[in-house]
Length: 431
Image (cartoon, rainbow, N blue to C red; front, side, top):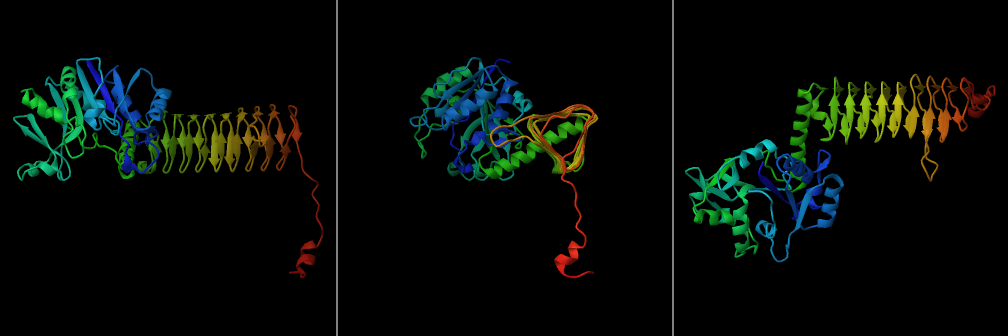
């Protein structure tokens, strides 16, 4: 489509009350600005992001994930405001779509409706039951005639419930004409993008209002707004995956990252958190479990289990209170109360309750390699680096520090002793 996209992300966002720039606060696993970028990428290959506050930090974060993004640093000292942000910006195509970096819920379908009009300027408008506090959009004969701040409204204008949603599609030649002529003769001494509406009206141009869904064009200005946006995004994500065939028990209790992918027949129980770049295929994630940046295939996890980043579980059963970290398990059973970290475990292996891989020596992490058909008794410790070959039995309570041979029974226990009648001697009475 013959359109460029400009994303305004220069503001300080003081109402967030945070040292983190507003647009880097996350919604469902991604900074809210990234949601806007990904929608923009569905529309155009010419994307410019306007930065000022913490520009270097934001720019660096964007470059870690995205390429072919243009950046413009606003001269906010001399030219503050949304109009000032557009000064000096050059776009490639006939039309320019102007978005806000704090609108993580906007969709490309809604933006296509703005872009597809033939008017000189298309602006988004929301109809509110209670428009108090918002500037009113005066519309006559399906054309925008004026935007009036509430404090400047007359009695008749105060009755208007059409307000500016803050997204515009403008012929690029008009931006080149109007932006340099903006003035800051207002109480805030800022340059307002909305002033070009009055300029266009004076030039008898067509300004078409497009009524949009308030939810999609919701701006995030505080941590309360952030939580509301998260709720909306989570509802969208869960609804999408349930339509794709994922079973969810009490879906409102489940958190799913926007980067997660489900494939095949999956069942997600209540209280589950799926965090980061997870790929879950034909698996059952039971109540209260947490999966982070991992791949789960033909497996069941939990309840109350945790799979930490960089794990790959295939045909594996992980029970309650088992924690897996940076490990590959293929055809393994770990029923309960175990920690498997920095390990590789092969098919047929059973990991008893209380087993841990001691992967950290205080300076570095080390790997544990466990072969096929290994039986590990309860309360065993495998001190890495260690390699357990196929067909080994490890007795309960054993600390493994050396590599055994295939077929071995590994046993490290002190001899059990029983001292007769010690209980009675200690407590002084026989009951």
